[in-house]
Amino acid sequence: MTSIILASASPRRSELLAQICVPFSVQPAHIDETPKTAEAAGDYVERLAREKALAVAVNFPGKQVLGSDTSVVLGGVILGKPADTTEAKTMLARLSGKPHQVMTAIALAKGAHCESRLVITNVTFRELSQSEIDAYVATGEPMDKAGSYGIQGLGGIFVKEIKGSYSAVVGLPLQETAAILAEAGSPVWTHWPSSLESQS
Image (tube, rainbow, N blue to C red):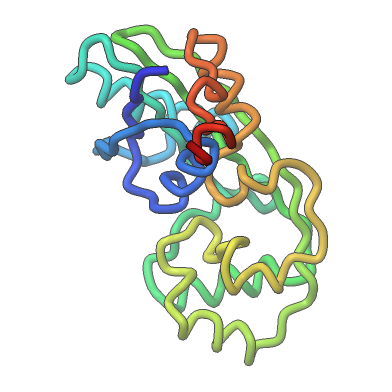
């Protein structure tokens, strides 16, 4: 498997790719992330993943580029990254005690060709008190995360139930990522270390 390009500056996506031993470099994409009028949440997330991958792929001919995007969706409304602490507190209060969806799309581009997948995970929060919302926002953790929380961090204590892909909620669905790379001729397991190698 040759090295791919991750079209994202997210440290969480880098950690997840490294977890499954995918060799990669990082080249963040810069695109307009404004939703289109009446655009469905799933369509929006998948479109952004594809646009990110293609925006980087055009500058790296012959290289495989992986794009991804994640949105938290409550009642059909997209909850993006909070603009400030007030918005973060408002989002968390809206999510308190309710089920919501985390939509993560991945896209693998090479030249002008692009394949994508959309993964939807159902997450339910327990009831949150205002004091713990305030304490959580004060840590700064919610400020760069869709929906104002990180399931892999302190925000994990808010999650009552999850149905679907945990890694997709973090930012990159590992099963689907491995599958889309394998379909493109780059199975991730070809770079897995052998215990025999580590002993030599």
